[in-house]
Image 1 (cartoon, chains in turn red, yellow):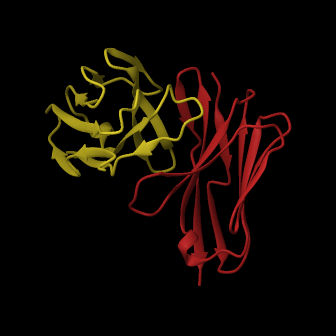
Image 2 (cartoon, each protein chain N blue to C red; image 1 turned 30 degrees about the vertical axis):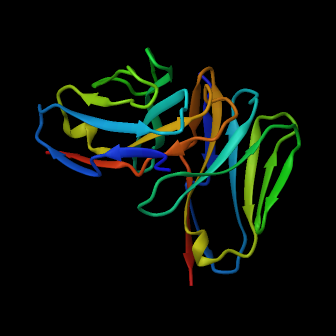
Length: 109
Length: 114
């Protein structure tokens, strides 16, 4: 069945460096969502992308949806300690929402 | 506005015991789901419901039962707890059938089976 693959699994960056996580699907997605989970917390919705080639920005976060609607990325510019956490992408499969395994971001001071 | 409420927050069970994890939402959402989160495994779907009276299996349903008698409540039952069910469980809800609407998560239940 359709899978949503996410890489890398872990990322350590120095504070101030950029960070990118990638999400790939084996099939075309009607939309893709991104969530953030702080350590010890629960996933919180960040954004949804629907259109082919769509790019959306939230302050230092840039989200892209691929032209073929099979891949997506989240890029954080100049990371801060508040960016620590795990970032998940999620895509629909039939009636279900399927999550990637997430990318855990560690910030080194 | 409570959103999605899960109880309990923490639970320790002995192998073979049964229990019910409660989940309630006050947003009149049609779609509710249960996920388990294990290190390195992300969020795996256990069961989901697209409306009252309708439930279906997710990716890892074995050992769990659900029911959806009302729109608000979606309890998850562990029939005979096993150490492999030690995990963090999240309940989530969204407005429609999960397609294109954001999911709201509960605070999670940390379950340990000894």
